[in-house]
Image 1 (cartoon, one colour):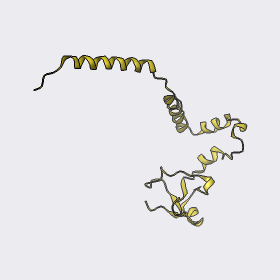
Image 2 (tube, helix red, strand yellow):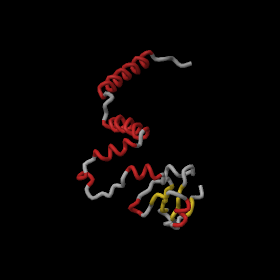
Image 3 (cartoon, helix red, strand yellow):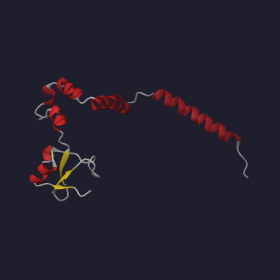
Image 4 (cartoon, one colour):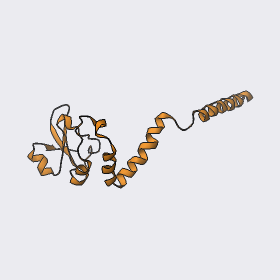
Length: 134
């Protein structure tokens, strides 16, 4: 057994105290936390009552949006079109994803690249898209 130096524990305690003072000084209200403190409760409210999404969309002034074509939020929620039509970056292949498939939640739809939503699998197949394998 080696001999324990008494001053090691004291040094560690002092450094812990110094760091604790720094932590208290920084406080909880850091800029990187503010986004989460605002957005997480907002997302919970919007998820619980989708009708509130329409109210929020009406609060945004049209001049803030500029020339952006924003779809009506009620049409997205009420339509029930939850099949994602995705275009593969590597092959350019048109693939649709159905809820419950492996990569459904990871898939993002970008209409500017020709990707779109479908209301039924028959509609997707008629448009020339194939079902994802996984």
